[in-house]
Amino acid sequence: MPVRYAIQSGLDLLLYIFEGDCIAREYFDMYHSAYLDERRHHGMKVFIDISRATLDFDTQSLREATAIVSENKAGGFPSDRVAILTKIRACDS
Image (tube, rainbow, N blue to C red; front, side, top):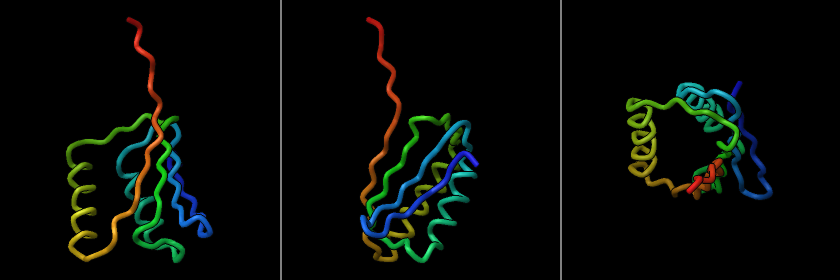
């Protein structure tokens, strides 16, 4: 699977790792698996590594992500603190 997660309870950290071609449905399936993990809680530090991935997210995927954030906020849950690692290519000038 091109996306997996790991939880480091001692660090209060949820790590998502993407590799290769990844479609939005694979991410959302993994998100829901992590959400059900008993070690997972709202307000965690979340680190998303997409540096080795090619993502295919469409407009509907963005709507689904927005809905998740809105539902969590409406439920009064604390926000996760998120950092994303990407691959940036240098531009030749």
